[in-house]
Image (cartoon, rainbow, N blue to C red; front, side, top):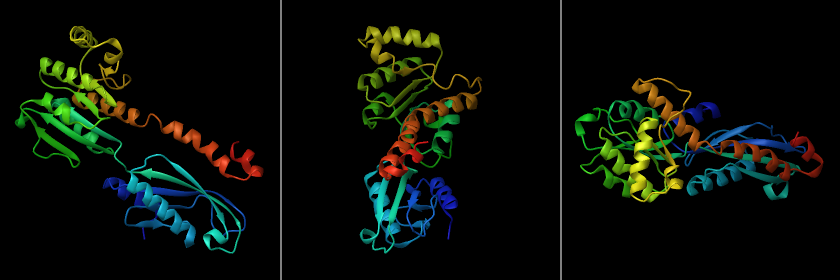
Length: 281
C-alpha cells in the first residue's frame, strides 16, 4: 500500500484530484496520533488516520468536496463517542486540503518560440491549456498532455469560447493580431489574468490605440505588459517562458497565504476554550 506521500505525488503527476486529510488536534483518550494523514481520491484511499468510523466520515466529506469541485481547505471537528460509534471520549479536528484540482484555464495565443517554451511548462502545472494559432506548421509534433491544440484562421473568434476566469496570454507573430486579441479580451473583462508579451514601449502604443477604441484606464490597468516576473531576467525563449509561468503560479496561488493564515484561527474556534490559547501561539 502506498504511503500518503507517494500516493499524493503519483496522483498529482497524473492530474487526478484528491484530498489530503490530516489529524490536526487530538484530545482525550483515543488511539489516534496528531499529524496522521490519509489521501483520498474519488475511488481510492492511501494510508490511514486510524481506521474506524472517523476515517469513514473523513472519506465521505473528502469525496463530497471532490464531487463539488471545492478547492478551499476545510476544518471539521468530531466529538468522539456515541456519535462516531466509539466508547472513548475526546475531540478530533481534521484538516481537509484539496489537491490536484485544475487551478487555471489558460489560453495561449501564439505558437512561436516563446509559446513552444511556455506551453510545456504550463502543462506540467495543475492547468488546462488551449494553445491557439492560425499556423498549423508552427506547432510541435507532440502536444503535451492536458493541452488542446486549436488551429484557427480567426484566433480572435476563440476569445468568445473561453471560460470566464481564464488566464489569457497573447504572444502572436503579428502586432495587429495582438491588438485585436487585446481588444476582444478586454471587452469581455472577465479574465483572471491577461498578459501581453512585449516591452513598455509596446504597452504605451497599445494603450493609446485601445483608448481610441473606448477602453478606459481601469480596464487597461488589468493588462500585464511586460508580463512575467521582473526578477527573472533574460531574452532566451525559455527564460521568458519561466518568468511568465512564475507569474501564472503566483497569480493562482495568491490566496494561499490567506487560507493558511485563517487555518490557525479556525482551528482555535473548534477546540475547547481551555486549549485555544495554545493553538494560537
